[in-house]
Image (cartoon, rainbow, N blue to C red; front, side, top):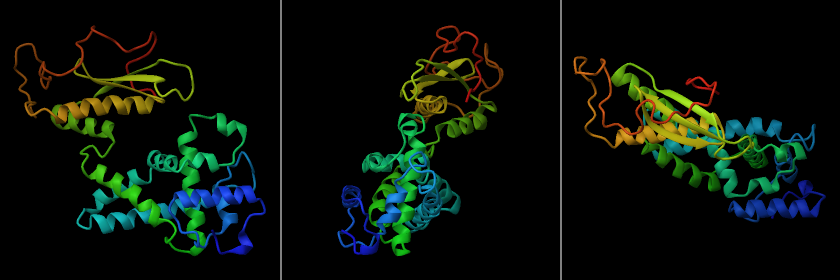
Length: 286
């Protein structure tokens, strides 16, 4: 693979590894690739403080946004600009880019120091950065998207389809807040507790989302933010499945305060189960 003999790496094993990566991406063996740039794109700053992926990540960040914009324009030409912008923000988020990187086992090709390898909480951003740098290297190899879109489009197209059919745009905290504010003029409350002290544990934190004295949903995640998103997702999807919740509740119902929710919501009444650890306040902790 590769027709730029001047950029072929002097390390045969590394050359073979990078060729295998591009093969997994479905790129042709005759693709014109600057292997030196690609090697740099997959070198973490902890492995080399001078020659690493940081500058290529800067380029790749712009390129991946362009690739996402082109695909959205071609796939959903009638989408309002605001909808396109919201969808693109999701497509190029660290979460989605890291997910794409995992499909190619990109971490296997990333050279990094031991401190980075042990940093499980930083894995998502590290993979997203490396993927952006890889995209930057491929773009600079030919000064076009010819080595980027053939493999990236399928991922973006699938995610865009999910986003288009997801009323919360996969940001369930924002969607739930909009729902509660729009109907009851008040905000939900998140209560978070730490279940494990192990960094990177996917169930390290547990969150509950409460509204007007009832727990609407709960979830777990490796960070407080992810746990809150999981709880908000459970609550929001439950609310979307209901067709008997009034948008405006009268304030003179016996036993109800103005805007109180009906009693058929999921979860627990106050006192049934509290998720607060001793000393925790029920507020949102980041």
